[in-house]
Image (cartoon, rainbow, N blue to C red; front, side):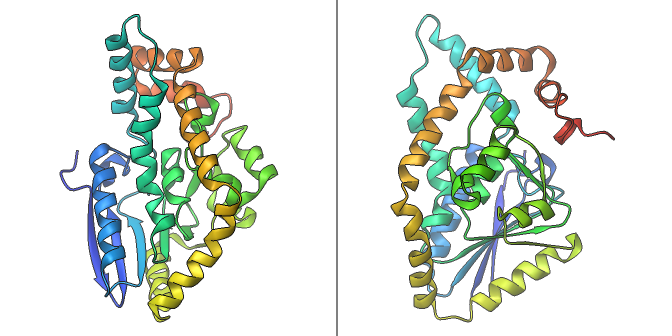
Length: 283
């Protein structure tokens, strides 16, 4: 595991936060969570920064939580509990520590842009959908496969970006979404050729950074407030609670047990084989 989960750069009023666990597909760990929280807070407090750009190194933007450690954590938790039942209040508190970091992209006073390449799935979407603007390479892929077993979206941003019916269409199947389709349905802003992603996203961020910072902050708050009025905080709480419940259903326990038996990657493949997507796509 990389000792440095991210790095930062600043140019022309844009603070770039770059995930740099490329070999691990920038999967979410406690270390990445904490580093990202500090980086967003620092950028939001810096008077020289007007726009925050989140991007990533390697073949994937973020392939979700590190499933190796998270399934092992649940298995060890179950062993420690023994005859005691799962503590939903503790789960809510611990998962909220992750979700609160993702929401920093939403609640930062300054605009946040994400540039996405490769996989952006599961917990990766919980993170990236909190951004104000999402630009993706044409080869990027989105989706929430844990909706098939062992999870629910914690930030509820799918509904606010897509509306009720389209959000249900993708969450009730967990289907993979190619980036051009994600742009067509409004999950993200736009796609560009993969080899132009970083350059295009930076140019867009610098264009936005030419607007006075106070204007940017007022306009962002004005755009976000309708979602707040629609109950985004309560929807998020329900999403975090249900994510914990989904990980502790019988099917959730079976998935963890199967992961221990055959390995997490094979367990995920078994989950997705009937759908023929993600790691189970025809080669």
